[in-house]
Amino acid sequence: MLEIERGGPILAIAPHPDDETIGAGGLLLRAAAAGREIHWLIVTTMRPEDGWPTARIESREAEIEAVAREFGFAAVHRLGLPTTRLDTLPLGDVVAAIGDVVKVTRPQMLLLPHRGDAHSDHQVVHDAGAACAKWFRYPSVQWTLAYETLSETDAAIQQMLPFRSDIYVDIGAYLEHKIAITRHFAGEFHPFPFPRSETAVRAQGQMHGAAAGYQAAEAFMLLRGRM
Image (cartoon, rainbow, N blue to C red; front, side, top):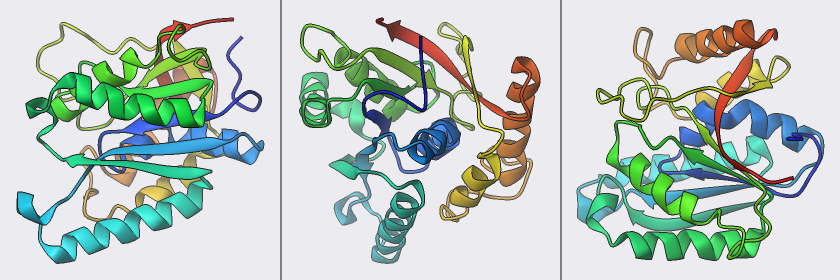
């Protein structure tokens, strides 16, 4: 049985900071409140050589620090790979880098972006993260779930790999805290009807709550489970 409050570490893998909050922030808050160890793996980073201004890089660092405090992560792991360019790297290198973090953190649960997301970074991270769910290489991993990301999962035009919700997690007690955390990502969130907005995050939580019989919920797609 999948449990949130009890179990080994949880590793949330985010192509970019804020993906984990949008897709699984309530689950992470609920797990941390129960004393479960949670980890944050940020795959990409903003680099001056890729054209990111110094001021934006500094503000992003401040965002990451503030969000890490809010969640109470046991550790923040950063691969420092170039954002928007993951699909130019050998996939095996990305798998190896993520695998090193999985070996160190020994998570019982992996949280990945959905394979069908519009952004190529999400697709690469999904494929690399899923490769780290093999029981014979990473025996700690028992549950691998895909989360959905507003403006990515819903923006995919090709629906060859639709997001099918088969697990709903009750986050009624944590929705407002999740929304408060999104405010740290001021550069990524804009007024509704922009997908990454407080209104959209709240509406999504309530919609999933209605589907599952909760005040608010997050939806996940089960990729692999072992009991």
